[in-house]
Picture 1 (cartoon, rainbow, N blue to C red):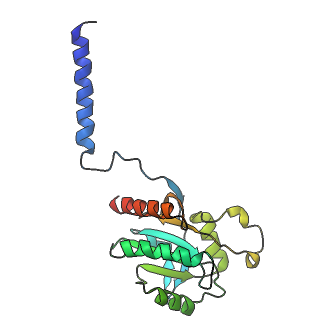
Picture 2: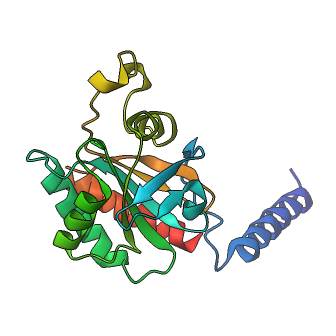
Length: 202
């Protein structure tokens, strides 16, 4: 094989490599994008101050979503200890928020959620607590956030009870991204922190 074809091949390889270097230099475009798992469907709930919160409140924000209930003595205290750690890191980010849904709206009224939020000593513009109709709350958990198996929706709504340790991560466009994070596992909480930072930079 003559030297001339080899020179041409090397030249084109270097040319292509240089093109991609300058195209992606200084950007994150070379990184694998976090997968889209689901899309947030329209909703309307009421927050701890009696104000309406809808799916529009998620737009242009990076949002961490969870389900809990105020009287829980099991996993919820640990979940919200881990969530408060996340809150402390990102509370000053203007495009970050946490949305905590009650899974026990029969007990967790607006005043109860207000008292609970005050006990955590958090900014409720950044960490929002919502209640609403049980069937709507549960439909969002299963159909939008993927925090509970939709197959569990087989009994009467009054007989159902969601008790999940999982967190969901929502991007600025209302897409559920990354993975479903186990809020009881420190490694997954650390992964969630990293993924929040990634989405804030997108």
